[in-house]
Length: 195
Image 1 (tube, helix red, strand yellow):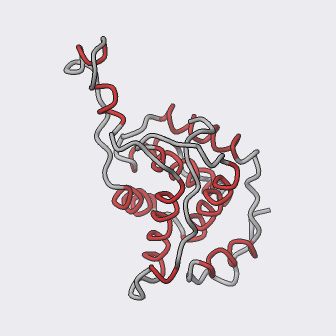
Image 2 (cartoon, rainbow, N blue to C red; image 1 turned 45 degrees about the horizontal axis):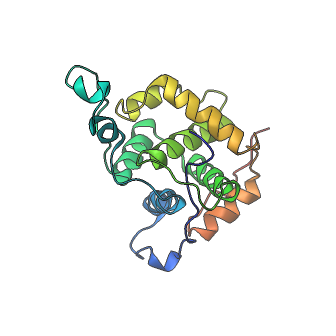
């Protein structure tokens, strides 16, 4: 993951979120929207990129292990957050990291089709580490993501996002509540940032 992975998109119009969507579903909806609007991406899956054209990789595609194709970003986010039982405060914190990333990226930055997935996993991992002394282990994140990314890839995503955020992971309780309210989500009044 390099600094040229995404391009800022328009701000979310909360009027576009259906009124029937609330709570955790609303948070997942806004997570998907934030990731989709963050970047301009290629239409082809990463696996398709290496199977087209000539060269050694395409000649031996039938014997080279290919990771599974990516599900929709909606299904991916829903599956990962459900299987890991991610708390709303962790997801809001991850969204704050995505917004911070948006501010650090050049307007012309682009990414591949899997970039939103990578940013989601890295921001989720960092947010969980921020909130918990016993955060999710990368091997469980690999399983929750359906094996689409390896442990090494997820660790690299985490390091890249840390660099892009200039290692600034602190989020105050007020910032979390304010961000959640902007999204129309109520976060418990007792939310306190970790020491």
